[in-house]
Length: 124
Length: 289
Image (tube, rainbow over all chains, first blue to last red; front, side):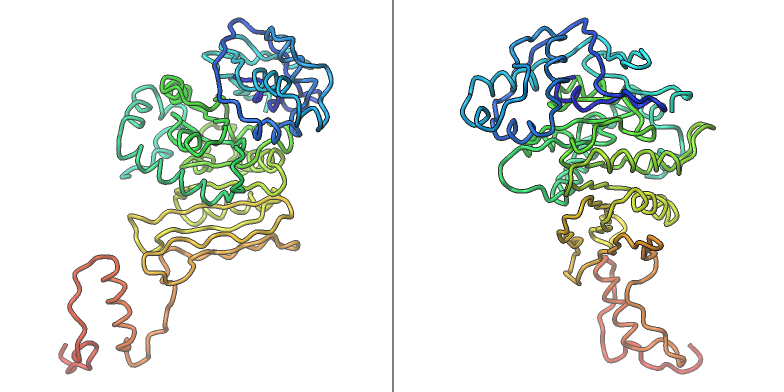
């Protein structure tokens, strides 16, 4: 699971108010290289919840991201920022670990990079 | 298929390890899935600006459709309920991210993050109640509602479905409408039982763009059934696939020659062996016939 997906996933349990973001408890992280495409990054930046991305990256051991989301000028001109964004968003993979709902503490296990988001009958 | 798989077992049980491998190693299935995915991507009508998008593949299975998405240069997130199918996807090292989840429980994705969604041969599984606690309508509602929310404005969702019957198709359409989607049904090769494929193309948001017409062997015109959100009643006009599209009421004196010629032409198009038309076609015979 990459941070781009983590940035979109919320806790689906019925009645939970604080669903997003899920806290990452990593056990195994791998890095897989992905082609750098600035167009895609610029397209996605508007949809990304920056704080969740920074916190998620930090819990995966990557601290290079700035605390605040960049403005459009940085985006256009600063390639090193784009590279950091690219690396954290698309190249860090959580292979084993869990995603934890902040409100209920429910753990969604992650195995072989696949988060198990199946809810039990009483959570639907 | 002689037996519809969704009548045999719930998807996470039907697609166990053996079935998952069989499914993925069948070249026929791989080929069909690739063609269906390409068509679905076409119908998504993503802007052709060379910018990769982030798509959702619902019921991604072993990643066959996802591979087509990657080939087109987009990033994707795949959701499936069968762990065995997803394991095959991991083995095949697909480029997309995978989620083990049940679409009938809701997608659980943040609003506006998805640029488009496709689903190849998966949504009909929602219409079966596999557990006593399942109520298909509620599951469809959870699915379509959460899908509508996570799609960005102007994004589309294209589902290739094999509905068991008219009722099932109507149920799916009705739930989609109620969730706020507009759109239509695109049918490719409507006259051929073998080649016929149905795609449900759903749009959300106020962007109005035209929906492509279905493919047709002899370019007779569009076989698209349009429906749009009607504020009062959410009406959907559907046509029974078995009812002939252009029907001329048979003459009281019996079937007219024109009708016979049209039927023969239809049969010829299907590939049947039909005697040639001549001055004897549809001629009034003696009453002993």
